[in-house]
Image 1 (cartoon, rainbow, N blue to C red):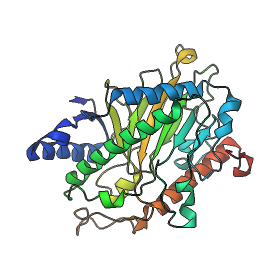
Image 2: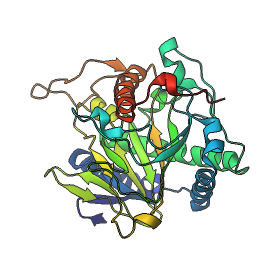
Image 3: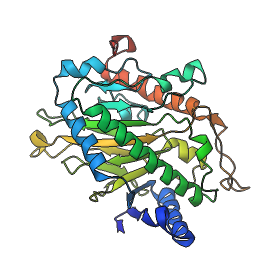
Image 4: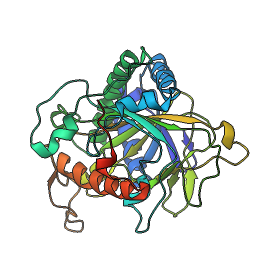
Length: 343
């Protein structure tokens, strides 16, 4: 099934079908990732109850007074854990050569549920402990269940990606055993004031990871994706489906055979703004921080030489994330020292 430029792929035949059915799904993924880098996925096997509990607990958290949410504020710029209030993020900052306005959103983020060794001091922020709020009481168990469910789906998708790239199905497994993936709730409050010109709920950006798995709602102010024609197209909203997109890491790994595409979240129409709150759950699949990212077998040829030197996944993340984060802080008029401890 396809909706405009966005294919919607049924993953069920890959998860339980025969060899021919699994190859067919892999071909669909290869085509989508090479064309626009986004696709919807159904037949994913994720229990809808788990997703809804995670969603509802996140909404309950964002409804808390600001002072209570700030008790688990992001500790430092480098550590992506806990709560980030509105005004301290601007995803378009790394993409623009001009100042941009902060995104109109808040977020709450956790990382892996299993503690792994820190490969080096500069990778320590990727292994930071999670910060859990005191309320709502059901948030932690609901989010831990959701993290495991997203993690399992990401593994299935990476298996399908490996097949799509002509690799052994488990090729990525050994490079994901100690991943540093994060699960984030991205909350866009009702808009009671008119945004300044150019300010969006989430500015145009690409993701840094291998792939992103997104569940969103049908509130006004939607996700838009840049097409090859250079126009913005609205991502499809299919009940029970996830939106998947390729990040910079996997695009680089494929020597840009697959594309990491600009996307943004726009503001609602003025008539809808006062009752437009929106929540998205995003799982950002990373790999082991010391795994080396270099052009995969089959992506390099005489006519298509390797475009990038080898780099560790952690170093690539730090390079891209810190450039964006520091630019975002400049946009917000803040500094790292302005941030209080998350304790």
